[in-house]
Length: 232
Image (tube, rainbow, N blue to C red; front, top):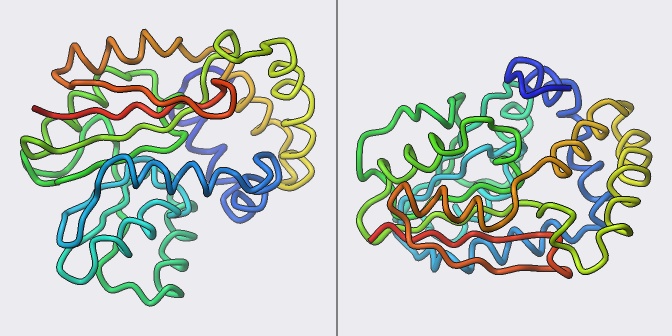
């Protein structure tokens, strides 16, 4: 599959109902740990206005809403209608009144300048060809001093054992994810998107060129990178 956004949207719509199961299996549940670390790295606080991009089924928008409390608010944005439906149900079930999700293109956000204190994106950047435009838009909607944390798989060459990483990506991940979701194509695309993802230095340079100060934290032997971006 190429980088056609309509194809990618259709793919995520198809797997939405079993996406969380697939995530839990292919990551052995560790994705939730990394998402908690993402929230911690932003220093999100009570009363903040929080934005989660490519929110999917809502893991981070729910976590963020709990941190900011009733004095704050949390918004999740995504281009997959089916994913958003799952996220809305989870928000209702959680009893949160300060969280919502909206249909939006993350390269053209429907928010005014300086609207948010903190923004996050977990495992979504690789699905967006216009990466520079994402950073530009988030820079625009963040307040001065605001933070963006981007959690993403790293290019296999950055892992301590790249050949082992590629075996996992190209063989085991599509197999496990395909069985969980009933859609092997989706997880073959996932492996392809990780293999083709730019190296950490390239992503950091894109963010810096858009005005951010960037610090990178790596997890699990370099297979996952967290880009902590500050708007001065």
